[in-house]
Amino acid sequence: MGENKIKEIIFLVEEDPENGYIAKAIGESIFTQADSLQELREMIKDAVHCHYPDEQNRPQLIRLHIVRDEVIAS
Image 1 (tube, rainbow, N blue to C red):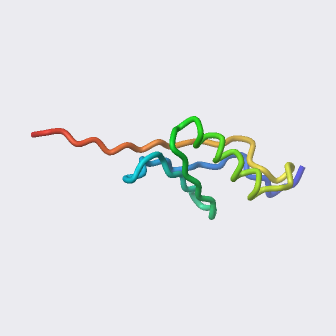
Image 2: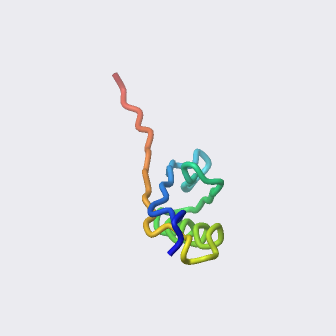
Image 3: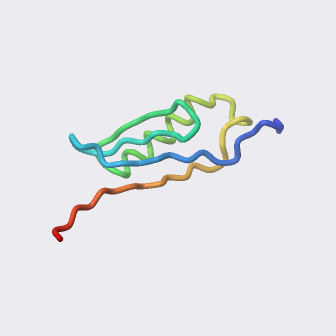
């Protein structure tokens, strides 16, 4: 096991104003988007596997921080 192994990677997930969702990794140059949260989860896993092709260096956990804007009348 490599000493530089990342244990967890965090994605900031937001609703896309045009439709669906976008996800950006915090501290890494990984970005993906999808029409549904379920599809986004799969796209994120695929993006992480592509960014870290070596399984020994791949993060063990992927955490999603889902942010949603909500507007209410005052």
